[in-house]
Length: 318
Image (cartoon, rainbow, N blue to C red; front, side, top):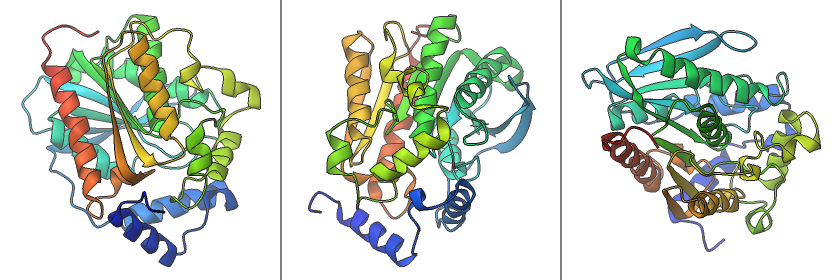
């Protein structure tokens, strides 16, 4: 695998020694425990934040748990609604706590991390409904949270980036909030599982294999037809005109690389300002691999810088 960065090769060796099981060979409960255990074993110190609190907010089916990270910056601050990754099946506020804390500390913004419903217990579109409801709540309650309702963005990785992209489209259609930025890190944009990267990086490049993506899809979607719904596969949206500006980050050696690249191209064709960055030699999930992988922090800093620019723009929204 000549494309792999030496640090990623070390990560893969460590994963092999840890005998991590392939996602597609586990039950959802087993896969969740494995990713939680992996997160607990992380040896990294996040950036400091002023405080963390949890809220239960109204949701379409039940209350939604938000974890609010408050920056050391004086209010009013900007706000970012953050959606964790995990194929719409695994992952949690805890597995992505490190990234959320860094996002808060690195941008000086209020971060609201969303505990959306997941499959297979709650099939599509439950995660979408919760994600957009959380965004609307943050917008409606921004001032009481010490945030500026005109300076809101969305961010996520993998399945979380899928939800961030869909939330941005829903916000455009609803007319509010007028998002300043959608930051998408190796997003799932097409549950059709298509693209050359699905063939080139199908196996041997970390835990996200082609088989794992099929496992996530089958646990998340109600039926194969759901893959044609733009709320599951945002690349299938009728139009991207007027959606929030974006930054799309991909990993070169990732089955989802083409998903992210195609989405950035679709935004650009619609006249949406978009920054695209592919990290060479990286694999899926590298974004959180601090301190083992230098490009993990580089990618996080790239996202922070994009949000700072977007929030500094004097124009109100997109």
